[in-house]
Image (tube, rainbow, N blue to C red; front, side, top):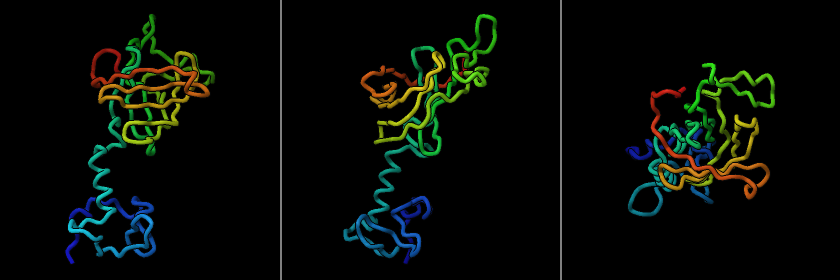
Length: 196
């Protein structure tokens, strides 16, 4: 029997997780016994259910990135830009641009408000200030943390991609009701003054 070319799109067995029965090498269809690898589901398309689901996910999510936000750059309050990146399947963000990357004495801006005195000499450029956001669907993320170098406080954060170039973040201590909303605008990564 010739292998189905669409099965080439499947990740290795270890990455498929619960859709793959590791001991017998057979596919598992939701709520059913493991199905031998060569057997097809009823229907004329010849795609197994697992292949169809994985193909749909591959189409909806960009290749090479965790989400539509991966590697994008977002401007916050016209003062700082962060680049989103994947960190172990979660979203994180690091500072890649500062409106004022040096102080009046031409010294690099540091994390002066950090509550830990040992960290107050860290440069802000390149500092990861957003971490732990996990996707709840294609355009919503929750459960993350946001470190604000302006006040040295770490806040909870959730985010929603409203349109491709607008991300709405809710930053809060305790419960979201008592937080504040920030609008982040997607910008191109450039080489002008202030880029890290």
